[in-house]
Length: 548
Ligand code: SIN
Image (tube, rainbow, N blue to C red; front, top):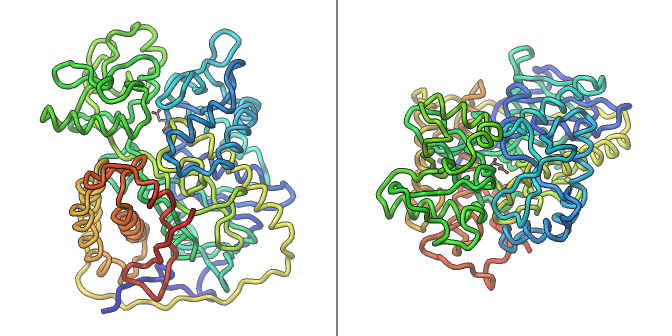
């Protein structure tokens, strides 16, 4: 049987589905998507589609904050240098410069739109996080920055008559005609299958933390955007670089809640099961080293002490400061009888952020004409091999705006006689027994956690590739009729690419740590691993290339 490599996940024929038209279609309702929609010229129409509500995204759950050069004695050069240092020589300097220099303007714009950042007297209160040489993180509601930022941005979207929002709408695939993106095939309870034809489309679907058993990400983060861009022919890159947040609450029965890095910025310490502080043994920046260093050290300590977690200790800090700065974390821990001012918090790393994704240029264009992208779904060149803390909401704001403006300008140039091209996709005959999709999904998450998490090696990665190939053979050969099946197909697609990139990169760099190749190898590996779908090579489903 040939390896299944469907261009579209479901059968559709233009005569048998509902049709809608918009100038700019934005796929994804997190910060990048909404900022993009707000950048579209109000004379044009724009439609945001999101598979859940507007409060279910990594943006809305963000605790730490947004990094920006806002203190009078901070310097753009220093924020740029910290970002490049964390990125392990794979950042694009022009991108880093642009994002860092535009950051303060985007943050001030959020304030104008009503975001209430925390203040110290009449100034913004600035926090510190790992890898930053100084305090430069604006935050809100203590440790619920994303909630407050999204409140203000959603209110702005709701007050913008030219922006329509479809919630609970799943994007199955991008529709392309002669290589150009013409919109997307969608599904929701209201219309069933429908095609939204768009003059320009922006992908802002976020990350893929749900590929791992241990993750800080919400249920919606299943990598859909990366998979649909791949099927549409877009170039992907850097997929081997997955950031593991060092401190995820680890209590049996609790959700794996993030314990913000801002706690360490305020002086929290990491200790082993015996109460011994260990980070100074690993890095002179101790708890404020970049996340790859801290996650790796935690895994080493878990192995050394034969204990399933380490502990985050805030008990030496001023109790009042801890309660007011971290009210959300205090409340989550209190549900499990932990008083964070007196008890140590059990933590261990979890999948947090995808540095890799859809390749974009400085303005947010992908390699597919008329398709743009912004935020975590992209590999913009800002993060390289490891993202600096609190640079992600910053990227969402800057690239959301540029992708929105670029798509808006391009849409204005497409005339209205634009008609729906004839595309269709044949139905696949249903084969064999019904599948237990939850079982495959859980097995996939456990496999990636065991074989491709903080530390990887050739043996574990090749076992993962074999399993994935096997699952893909029977899951991708079918057509499903609801999001559970489509999500699993997307997760398998992204996992396969991620693992093959990780197996390919025989060195350690940033968040990609190979125990069998522990050193960084700039001579052979100071470049990106890229993928483009190739129907001629469906088993691997990609051309694996190298790009500077
Ligand atoms: C955190 O609060 O630790 C997460 C912030 C981020 O991922 O940048």
